[in-house]
Amino acid sequence: MRERFAAIYTAALADILDARGYHAQTLPVSIRPLGPGMTLAGQAFTVRGRPAEVTSYDAALRNVLRMLGDVPAGQVAVYACEQDVSAHLGELSVTSLKARGVAGCVVDGGCRDIRFILDEGFPVFCRYVTPEDSTWRWELEATQVSITIGNVRIEPGDWVVGDDDGVVAVPHGIAESVLGEAEQKAATESEIRIAVREGMLPLEAYERYGTF
Image 1: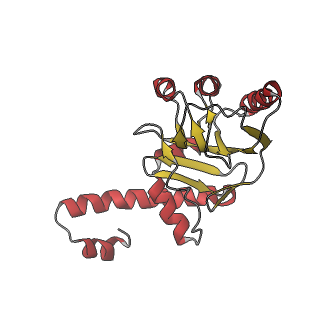
Image 2: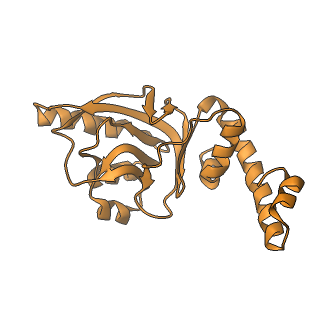
Image 3: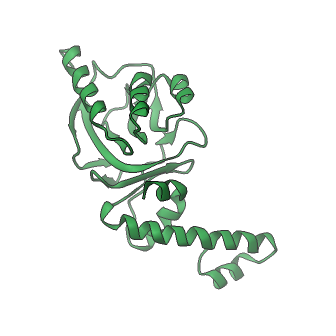
């Protein structure tokens, strides 16, 4: 499933979800890949936190480090941070996640150490970058709970797919059927691409293939 999701593009998934009535599955447009061409796909390991005036740096840091060690290989850590002033992910965290086979991170918050992360080649999607550490300013509340990012509700185990267009969340209960339909749509769009390059008009292509 992960290899198949990694091979499909987010627009195809978004179109299938829309057609099924799931109109709130694309994360906010402000969440972007750190570098062009980054992609990720995997089931969500959810992380929820909140702004806080931390009194014990050591305790706060230990909680985050414990959480990082809990993310399973092949999954995507998805952070709902509820904060826009500090970095919730950095290079050493990424190095550890990559070493253990984690598929990537989606952070509705900040990231730092960008050059080092790009050198690692680990896929990270985030809302902003800043050098400011979150440990004094933010606390981890829970993992593997329901979270909401923008208008998108994400449950542990939902599938998360990201590319240059953004990030889409696919509810785990319909993931296999949505993926199958998206693969069919992508194959049809490949045929349409050839047809319009050869001069077929857009409306004619839509009438022939049923999509555009």
